[in-house]
Image 1 (cartoon, rainbow, N blue to C red):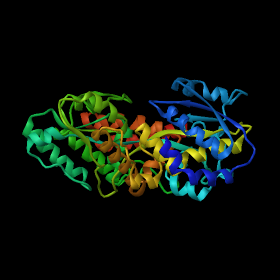
Image 2: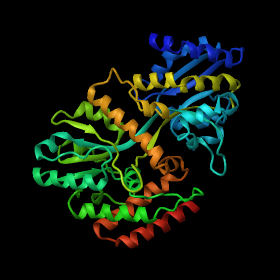
Image 3: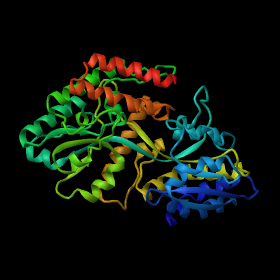
Image 4: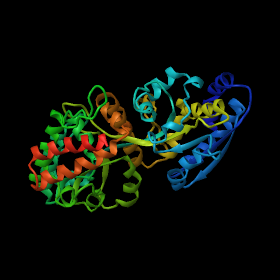
Length: 421
């Protein structure tokens, strides 16, 4: 961390003048998937040096955040700051950071994710939290299968149609079960649908779902199953809202591509030993190069008795150099848009992991530029309705239980009814 302190020296001096001279203690409730809270703890001495404020960091299990935090927020036991994942669901408790931070800098750096924190119905200005990292959907490819099949892998900017053609050729040349497997969830389905032009929302932010782009991809997706590109063990083997993880099919070497997301990087690095794999850029189409983002965030709460100090802490962590250090040391994808463009130096990661992280970070930036509806979908308060409805009816179209026209009509009707409840 010496490099962090040295490289941010000027930043610390500037911040010290920007914040109040009074010193407060910030109570920070933090959960970690790996080392996120540990890395934040290493940054806190620099924050105290810059501002005079101290931080009482309590690292807890995710179940505390999930099951107990909201109850705490309704009592005097609430922390000042916490790391959370239910971004929209806790909005009523958030402290608006806008009076305490440079809003222009925040909007330039995190503008794509700021709407995820805001309450629906007109709040388009509030700044409520820092995305500590992003998760992003995208494909993994079995490089060894492509080499064995003698098939050239499509390059940057390739379309889903390009990939489908190549994957079918790999399947035919190697005799594997299928070319492409996708987790059975509308979350994974959405990225390719965006690429085919699906908007998911109208200009007013209302879900529309079955537009021309949505219908186009639905037809393609059903066709991928009819052609044998996608396996019967995937979507057709599930029913209703059932989630099916396609990772076992990819790990077994029976499919050449897995449409999943960045959260699989470390698992694949640890568990795949029989073939070479890599992440590839999100395939494109007439609608752009779609990918679905998500992740965890640090927020402050209205109930804090030290709003300036709580906001100062979040502002400090979100600053570009600190966000870059956090991403590099935790091996996560940054939500900072300029850093997505310039790239993070994952010096301590294996070459495969570092390359995959860079690919997914680029996917996040490309999606923000070309398929912004992905960020709208992530922040939509009732996205769980769409997650449940889409796989149910698309699967029925794949298996022949319903015609595609009837399935698409049912999707629109069912989503509209459930959103109105």
